[in-house]
Image 1 (tube, rainbow, N blue to C red):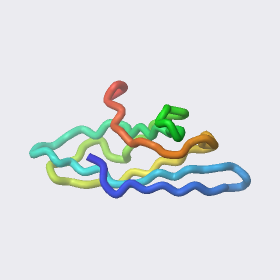
Image 2: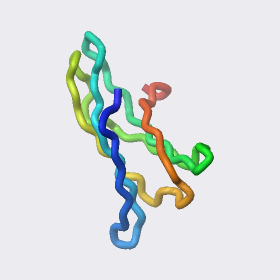
Image 3: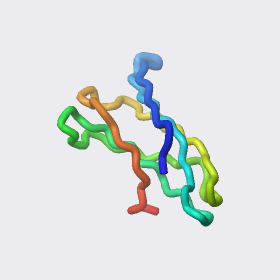
Image 4: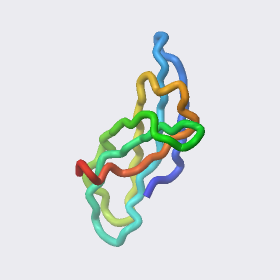
Amino acid sequence: EFEDISSQRFAERGVSILVVEGRIVNVSGRERAVPPVRVTLLDASGRSLQEELFEPGVEVLRAGARTTFLGRVVNPAEQAQNFSVTFDVDTF
């Protein structure tokens, strides 16, 4: 599961950057592999505008363990009003 997800948008050398970060928690009772994290930028109607994949930094979490993730989206869609964070189990 994801916890404490936050985002920040800023410009770096004239380039728009969106940083999305949070925690990944293994709520199961056993060790679990951690798939890539997918951040999907959404417009005001909830339609997908842009997707980015990020490696979580760890491959496996033991039962009850936590880790953090941080993803940077370069030039995020200007129409983006919201985002979703999911695990990319399709490519895992």
